Length: 160
Image 1 (cartoon, rainbow, N blue to C red):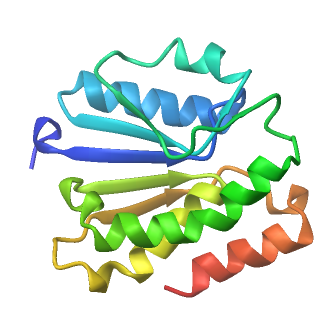
Image 2 (image 1 turned 180 degrees about the horizontal axis):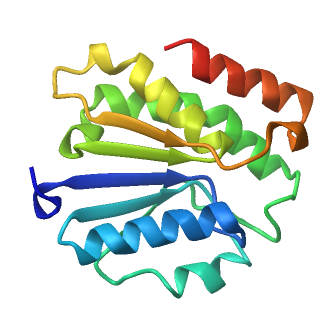
Image 3 (image 1 turned 90 degrees about the vertical axis):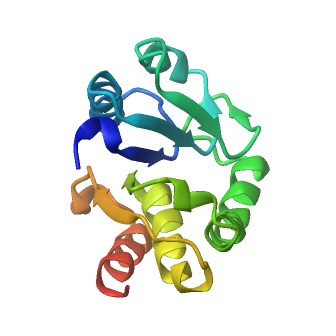
């Protein structure tokens, strides 16, 4: 299979500013330039997103899972907490409805995106549609994570 035959979904919680976001941006742009059908799914928007999204190739489709805009990606607002609680149900729905079946590859990056993709992969057997290949790149040093984030990361990596 050649790049132009691929359909890829990149998932990241928010674009913000950072190294992980640039990695996803560069991967999405490169795959789109190679002829792949590429969509980028972000969970919520922040004020910092504009600097990164301005560099997004026009051939990359931009999907927002929540119509939520936060002042900062470090904001602990009720909207962000509600989005986090709703995320497993949306992942379940995206999987069983077959929405992910149009993709050959689902690539996740950062904690919430990894959590979303993990839930999708766990419930993939409920979909009668073909399963995409799930790929994860987790860009963080585990020392900088909060203890609950570290435990969730180890759970996601070891239970699938």
